[in-house]
Image 1 (cartoon, helix red, strand yellow):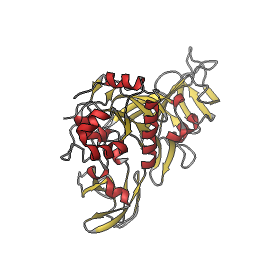
Image 2 (cartoon, rainbow, N blue to C red):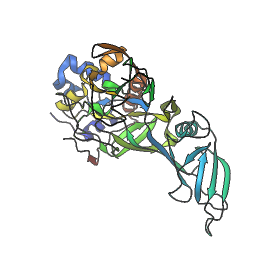
Image 3 (tube, rainbow, N blue to C red):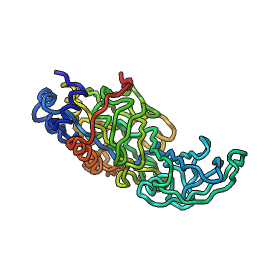
Image 4 (cartoon, rainbow, N blue to C red):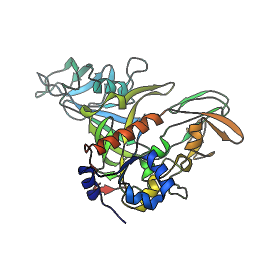
Length: 374
């Protein structure tokens, strides 16, 4: 048995498509088997929400009179990159501003929330763009365009960070106490979008997704994308593996799913909500989307030495089921676990995407190109 995305879309249009969240699919496959699931389920929705540092905003402010070609610019005191075109700016989520704990991710949240943002800029001062200075206010409703652009999002799997040194360290995965006392991680386990299609059979360039509370598109593999990672016997990667680059119109998004964050001792970032619908084309896809937290193993890495020195050493692997329990064991020691991402928000995104599909507000798209996944 094999279905197509086109036939699934027809079922969505006529209201007969069966849509389950990733968590619901895990239970369904366990109870009914992958074969029955393939026959009865059409779409599985996924979701993740956490800091995604390789994010930013491409904004065109529109022209001012007299015209200006930006040489340097700040938004609410946060520096934006100007080397694009006259009034185009790129604001990185991790750009740090003058105010402590406030950066690019917070500016993006302010804009999507409808708040006014202060723009201060210097111009090159040319004959066609004579203006040399600008101080004004902008908002999502006044700019010509605002595109959320993310170069490396939704990691297929990720490290669990620990600290084997005798001092506290501060990392992008949180504050790690000395002597293997706690462990920080990020991910949504069985709800993780790329875990549910580990070989990228249906995810690729042109895939329509939930992005930041609105809709967006996958524009290609993300930076640091690894197409041939170490995998478990179930095909699930046991290391970082795949990533995606995505893009979407900020005007259709919501601040609940785009939040500026400050990570103590590391810096600022942006928490982004991403959800991907997985079409159940056949029994294999049903089996893959039936993955459970206990089946997903993440590598444990010492962030006091091995991570910064790029040694490649892995201390062991642990399942997401154990991570979510609040305690793991490493070399006979008990470590408390904490997450910088939100599993609850990941589930919410999966349910919201399911609701959109059931209400015929979201159709699946066939990717123009799938990523190589050996």
